[in-house]
Amino acid sequence: AQSVTQPDIHITVSEGASLELRCNYSYGATPYLFWYVQSPGQGLQLLLKYFSGDTLVQGIKGFEAEFKRSQSSFNLRKPSVHWSDAAEYFCAVNTNAGKSTFGDGTTLTVKP
Amino acid sequence: EPEVTQTPSHQVTQMGQEVILRCVPISNHLYFYWYRQILGQKVEFLVSFYNNEISEKSEIFDDQFSVERPDGSNFTLKIRSTKLEDSAMYFCASSGIRGRSYGYTFGSGTRLTVV
Image (tube, chains in turn brown, purple):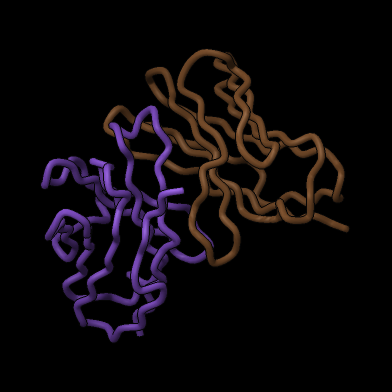
């Protein structure tokens, strides 16, 4: 069965600093991977996805993620964080049938 | 940009009562899903629905749960007899093709509080 691990429950960065959120997955076939962001009381917004091709994928809001098959990782990065990026971030992997398995999430706090 | 709409945004119900959570998926999408998120926990898959039948369901989705697409636009989740542990945020999602290669569009959720 597929699984997703987000090792960091909570990360705090200063505004303008770079950000990396970690995600490790377990899936028997080629994974289809996603990052979502959730602001307090809000739904889930898709940031970016990977399913083939270039291992570095670009998303919305200046985010990118790098797929590393050898490390079973799909880490999310942003060069310069803005205060509005404070939210919870979820990594997810999809099965063939379309079912998503989510990680526990990482809460991002941005210091002024 | 097309949206998935969920109503109500917040529902409070007494234990043992039936609730129906409503969703309007994106109009040309074919695959529909319900997920839930208990406060402070991860998002969990409940059920997927395609061609008017359930494609897959999780262990959470027991006999107390049912889904329906009563017309061409709505997709509902019914909980027959709510329990305290059903309190959670319920998210509806839809996708235009089989979800494996395509991120879903999620609704903003219905917060269900069972008292």
